[in-house]
Length: 453
Image 1 (tube, rainbow, N blue to C red):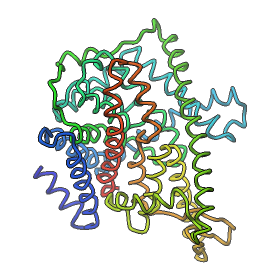
Image 2: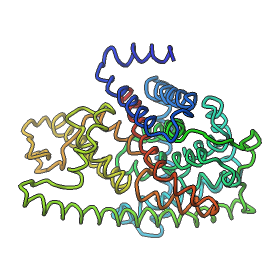
Image 3: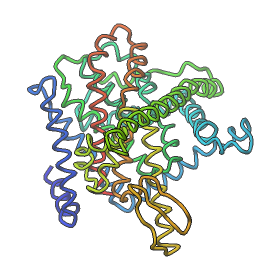
């Protein structure tokens, strides 16, 4: 603790005292969840401390050191390159103009390709090996049970549906605290296939990968504050070897099974994006209609969230001029879904690139604001909703990375309830608290990543 505190003071705070806001944000989230914990007296601070410490260490190694930053940049480029192999199949099925229908014909085929490769790795035992060792690493430092740790490790690569499948033999005997940790880990992470979607929206690949890694200890830490262990766990070291095994008989069958199973995820993504964008448009039109009659021209859902969630964005370290925009994205992610939020973040990132080209490369200075939009007269272009600082982009990338929204509650209940139907009542008691905790884990990751941007 002394070492970490000394480094933070010397390297992060002395030259940039504004980063104190991020530390204040961390303290605020911890205090809020402690006050609302189901049993404050039972909170074990060991996993909380080490969850935050591992986040700081990961941020230091992956974002602050040259070797770590370049390594994850390289990994991000390789992941982006790997996912583009899905273009071959998409082009064969949909034709040369497949990219014109960006989401349907370019982005969603990535999900099929990713699921296929994960299924093959699962058949070969490679996925179990990776998850088992990452789980052991988390359990060693944080003192969490094997099932909790394995699920958190699985969530780095898999979604809230697939990760619990790996520990399905352990689910029925879990305590409520352990089940809560499983749910929180699912809400605080995303499926690996989703990273390709966010990359195509413009989010930096290296930061997405770093966020996936940092969210694992954060989810466990937050979960153990808000729902500490109050029962006697049945966990043992043998649980590391009780993970589910592939049922397929050969690699070809495993690949086919993975491709087939992706259909459900593709359907979930497609219908959720269609539904949420449609609902958001209807809601904004309705709010605008009422707002105009009250003398407020820009009264939308994002407008409401930009004020209601302003403190959360501000205490993550976002500058005051960008806090409303990032708060609006957090609101969109929480009340609709993360795909819509990342699409809107991608617009802001694209705006920044176009603005930089206009002012630096083309050397034009005649741009101006019209409301929150930026007008570029020489190219007759409007940058909707303007731009945000680089630090704000990075914090938003981390804060939005998670399935923690109200729509995902139904998905979580359906998935886990199908695996352990006898625990449905227990799941219904903890799932809302777990969703809020998962969202907070993402925001805490943003607090830690911001000073290292």
